[in-house]
Length: 206
Picture (cartoon, rainbow, N blue to C red):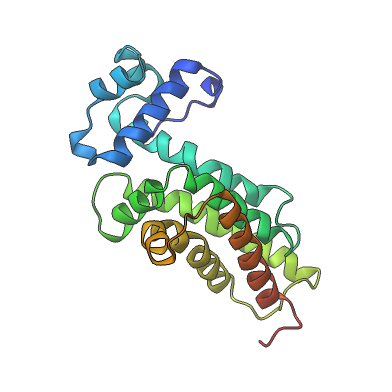
């Protein structure tokens, strides 16, 4: 597993990550070659070895690079109160609407066990689970949410509301006869944030 945070501002590294994301989302892992990624990134193939070690290292860093903005929220102030869930939903929809195939890739690896990186993705999700559980406990301690709530249930409910609109985006758009554009997703984030925060507050039915 390779992590090279000191290179985050390097344009070649960023081009390789973008090319990897485009390539792995559009084709199966075993069909994507490092040569193809390097060509898409207009970079020498040796730069993949330099930054990421190998194809799997690049694949893992691509997943980490995509998920980190969402996981980092759990260390910040956005979720210091239940009002922040609207913003968190909005961030998720905004991030994933730019690359709607990404949640499908994660689902394919975890649920169908297709492709590499299963243990790595599980480690990232466990990191999110641990941080999320701490946020829940912090909000419980100041009386913002119902004390008896199970953090795993809270997390599962959030993941369901966040992932399904993106996973089934094509189906929903066809049924509705309209596009789930930025304005639609912002309104959905506000509504789901309201539903979620209402369900968490002590005034709701336990």
